[in-house]
Image (tube, rainbow, N blue to C red; front, side, top):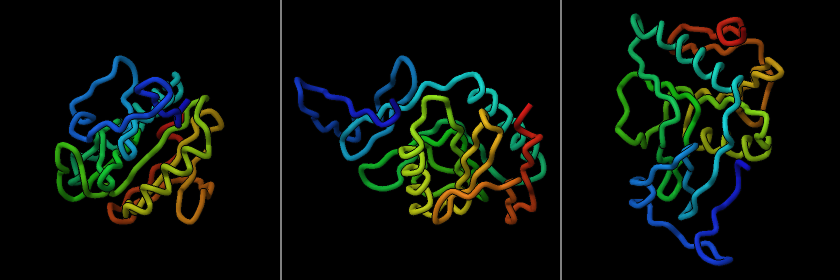
Length: 174
């Protein structure tokens, strides 16, 4: 469950200090951090992983001519007490800190079959509120693309005018 909160003691939730969270690792999928609580993320399925890899290949090929920095599943500090993990992020024009605390140019979430759309929408809105100019949602199961502004809008491609680049569906859907 993507929005499950971990009960750390018998029946109650105990706040975890942010420093402890930043030192933690998990045996499966990394957790996000919301005001002292660990938030479980869904386990990616094959289509999720394949799409994420193709997104990285697309942006990786462009790195030879454009000054941007790609990262996958990297903890990012949106505000004090809130650390989210986008599936893919693109920073431009400078390389981010080890734990980025300024918005990337692009934040991308890829849907897995078990994702709850309400939780995903909330996360996308948080990226927008943080100041990410391009917030995208990719649904590899339905082969659809969405941008997030005031809400989700289905689109036929993802343009990035700052880089004079457009990501077409053929680049990420087999």
